[in-house]
Image 1 (cartoon, rainbow, N blue to C red):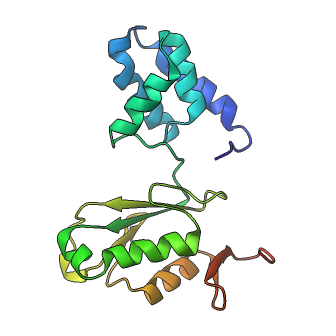
Image 2 (image 1 turned 90 degrees about the vertical axis):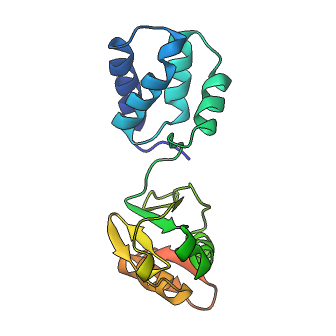
Length: 177
């Protein structure tokens, strides 16, 4: 995913601020990564490279660590964060179908963000709304009984135009595909 205008400077500034407040030791890597992620809402490759250089460790070691622990986010969150519940109740009544439908409509996979940064998609454990299963949470707004048709309705409600003939979702106002 490419950086948006002004983001490189924000990344450099944020990393610099966090590193300024930390002792430059390998054992501080996880706290440093968590603080940078808190500032940026994700860990871009540039941030990991800057941290690696400051701590004199290979960037690949940082990437390996961030992909091992699921609390690290490697993609920027979208304006609309879609969380598809995969708790037992939701999974049993169609949560996986809803997740697959969002992936197809948005052209992204679980854990990814659309190139325009409008939507991000993630799988989550139980959100505690089992009677409404399957459930999707959009920026803290709970959407219950999500079927493929409801997926389309949810996306349309957040500014996506659904092309029935091709099944491709587009942002309203864009022309062609």
